[in-house]
Length: 491
Image (cartoon, rainbow, N blue to C red):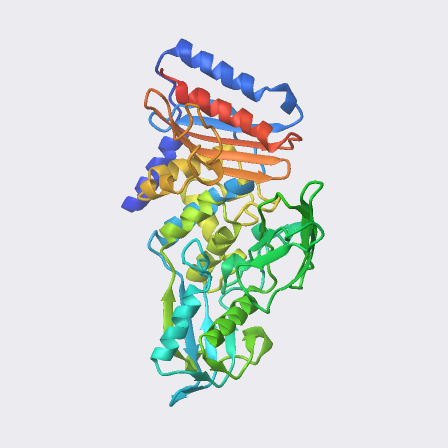
C-alpha cells in the first residue's frame, strides 16, 4: 500500500474538497433571483461580441454559485500575478530576502582599494522610494561603509556582476511598441529605481518657453531631449520615446500653463549598467576617488568568483513587503523577478525557464494539470498566457487555506481603498469588502479574488473577459455590479 506524508495527505484532501460542489442550502428563491440577475449582467448586449469566463464559489460550503465557461482558458492579463505570487510565497516563504554583495578582488593599502569593486546581485527590486527615502539611499550607505573601512580611493573599476540571471531581459511575446514604458522595464539581477527613470514635466514661466523636465535621478547614463513647449491655448498633449538599445529619451508635445505637472517613467536599457553607473556617481559625490570605469561584467574578461572578499552584504526588505507592492500596484518587474529568483534558488540559474519549472510544480500541488494552461511570463503582460477561471479559483482556494492566508488576503487590492481597486466599487456593498487582483491588457480584463456576503458567507470568484471592444470602464461596470449583488446577498 502506498504511504503518503502528512503534507501530501493535506494537499490531497484539499484537492478532493475543492473538486466537490455541494448545493446552496439557504433561501433558494432569493438565491435564484440573485443568480438570474448575475446572469443578466453578464448577458449585457454590448458584450455580445466578447467572451466571458466566470466562476463564483462559496469558500465555506464548497458550493458553486455560478459559472460561465469556467473551464475554458483565457488570457488573464495581470491575474497572472496570482500564479506567480502564490508560487513565490510557497517556495521562498514570507521572510525571504534578496542579498546583494559588494566585494573586491584587491587589497586595501592605506586608504586605497587596489582593485575592483564588484557588485553581485540576485534581483533585489526594492532600491526605490517605495522602500527607501530615495532610490540611492542604499548606495549612500555603502559609501559610508567603505569610508568606515578606511577606503577613500578605489584604484580599479566598479563592476556589475549579473550572471546569476540569464540574459533574457524581456518577457516572451512582449510587444516592441511599449518597451520604453515603465511597466515593460527590462529584468536583471541588479535593479535600481525599478529599471526606469521618473520625470516630472512642468510648464515654463510663459507661453513659448520650453517646459521644465526634472528627473528623480541625476545621471549621465540617461540623456533627455526635451521638445515640450509651454502654451496658453489648447490642451496639454505629449509623447515620449526611447529607441530600443538606447538611453536617449525624446519628449515632444505641449503643456498648458494651467497644467500643474506631467509625470512619466520611461524604462532604461541595460539595468546592470544603469545600476553601476549611478552607484559610481553616488560614490564620487560622497568624495570617493574612482580610477576605473563602471562596467557590466559581460564587457570584461571573466571574474574569479572564488578569489573575492565580501566587504558589504545588503539584504532587501522581506518578501512579505515586496509582494504587497507586486499585487496592489501590479508591478510587472517584481513579478518577473519572482520567476527568476525561483529558478535561481532551486536550479542554480535565474532564468524564466527554470522559474517556470518551479511554477508548474506549485500548480501541480494545487491539482492543476500542466497541460491545461500556458504560463508564458510572470506578470501577465504577454498575450501568450492562458488559464481558466476554475484554475484561478483553485489557486485562490489553496492560498486561502494555507499558512499564508492572512498575508495573502492583506496583499490583495481592496475595493475603494487601495491599489488598483482604489477608485472602484465606491458607495456600494462591495466597497471595503472585495479583495481582488485586477488585470488589463488590450481587449482583456480580469478580476479574481474574495468577498463576503451580507450573511457572512465567504466567496471566491474569478472573472475573465477576452476579445472585448468596449472601454475598461464598461467591463468594470459588469464585474463590479456582479460583486455588489453578491455582497448584498443575505440582507
